[in-house]
Image (cartoon, rainbow, N blue to C red; front, side, top):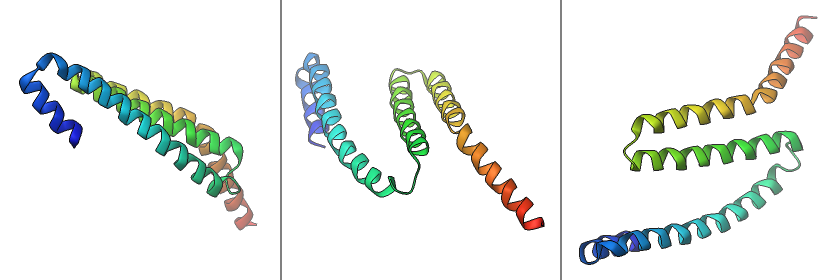
Length: 121
């Protein structure tokens, strides 16, 4: 909120400095997000490390990274006035996550098939 107010005030008085403040704010927020994300990943990995196999944990982390990058890229596209491109970026991100999750989907289908065939015996 402080960055937003400062940005509005600076944009009014010195518009050429607004871009610098925006970039500085972005760097600060990125650093804060990285430190919080590192703590969160450490905590979640401690909780799920024993439950999820390494391959599934890896897929989950990759999907999370793709989702964040897709959202960031789509937001940049929208801010640039390219709403259609943002929609395509989001669609590509969703398809990439779906392709990444195919091994998990196969294992779930296999497990369900095994349970159904075992229940029928």
